Image (cartoon, rainbow, N blue to C red):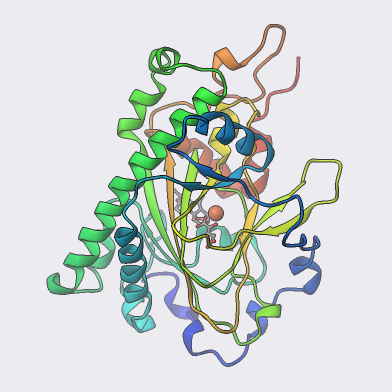
Length: 349
Ligand SMILES: C=C1C[C@]23C[C@@]1(O)CC[C@H]2[C@@]12CCC[C@@](C)(C(=O)O1)[C@H]2[C@@H]3C(=O)O
Ligand SMILES: O=C(O)CCC(=O)C(=O)O
Ligand SMILES: [Fe+2]
């Protein structure tokens, strides 16, 4: 029996926040919120422009996140994937639980996996589509009901892969690697067999948003994440200045029409030998709107070991991290969560 069913609580019909979902204010306000028009504004980059590589590189070094415009994804498709996600989340809880994520599986419905590292529950639900979307939607819907969902999510994944490859290329070029070097290192060729997943996130309106956490602070583990967030509802925040001299603060990343939000993941931090930093982020909730976000997470093929690219290690320096495959890294995260990156760090020589 799926593990979620015995204690499932329907967030959509809640009129108060139960104790198990009520986060201490000291955790919710562990860092101050940045002023909206401060120096922290997230870069907006047209990734089709000739200067894209250097702008992307600067954003990945300084913020670990940026908005991408000029990505080419049809706006109809962005609307369609969101409405298909909304259609799925609008089903009654007992229907969604038919696709509950089973232990040891990536795909399915439930709380995001990071939930197990926190003493309080998050005000969100999610569907992870790691392979064929039919594996999940076929447990809930009949053929007539799931066919459009599968068509849209498959098309969306194909577009996302194209965008992710373009971004990875720009990122590698920004680190001084040309086409020949990336081809020789096999990096871009390997990405044909990349492992990817769509994470559909739903944050139902919350009666007491000041007590709840939508998605707890975390970094994403893959190479990069391409996030689509719907029109009106704000929620995403990044932690800025975590390792710097200024005090850290939460910076809002509001939806920007037509733009996708790009996050640097832990594996990209490893690949870049620490030049890029994965970005810690979280999602807060609101009382009025049902917020939906769609995250496309991409990593290397299962067998590929990711370690610092040799060309990026300057003479006399040593690699900062040991090489790991994505499944190995996910297994470390499942044990250590946000200490995982430290676990693969190598001592400086
Ligand atoms: C491939 C994956 C990355 C992910 C864990 C997963 O197996 C499927 C869900 C992904 C997600 C989405 C929400 C945040 C996150 C930290 C989580 O708990 O589940 C990420 C995971 C990750 O990036 O490690
Ligand atoms: O909903 C959001 O804005 C954040 C989602 C997220 O962090 C994730 O899916 O990894
Ligand atoms: Fe995330």
